[in-house]
Length: 164
Image (cartoon, rainbow, N blue to C red; front, side, top):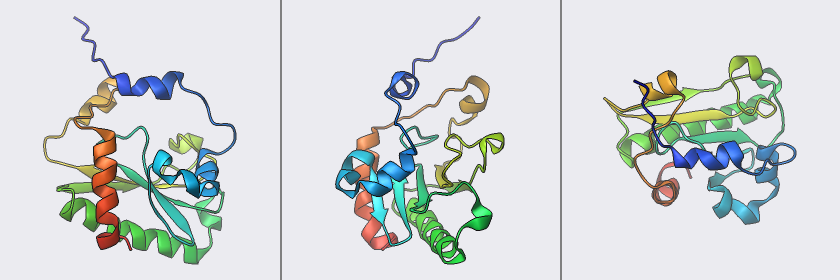
C-alpha cells in the first residue's frame, strides 16, 4: 500500500516563481530585503542565510558574496572566513538551538548534487538523535516539525552572541 505524506511547504519550491539569474547574487545585492530572504548575518566576505527549503529546522548556509562555482578558485581569505563562521555556527546550533549533531557540507557542481551549482555555498544542518531525515532518502520528502519564521527569529537572536 502506498502512503502519501502531505508536504505543503514544498509547493512554493515546485510551483513558485523562478528567480532569473543567480538567487545568491540577488541576495548579496539586496541587503534591504534581508528579512524577506531570511539573512542571519552579512560580513565583508559572505552572508549567512536560512535555507528556504531545509532538510531540518535551523538549516542555514554560508555563502560568499563573490559569484563562483569553483571552490578551488575562491580567495583563501574568503574561505578561511567561511570556515570560521562555520565553526561558530556549529556552536550556535548546539548551544542555542539544542542540536545534538551537525552535518556540514558542500555539493560542488550539478554532478556533485548542488541544487544551485553556479554559486558555491556551505550547508550547516542541525541533527538530533532519532530525527526523521531518513524520509528524505526514501520518499524525497521533508518532515519539518516547526514554523520556519519562528526558527529564523530564534537563530537571528542568537547571531550576535555566536557569529558576530
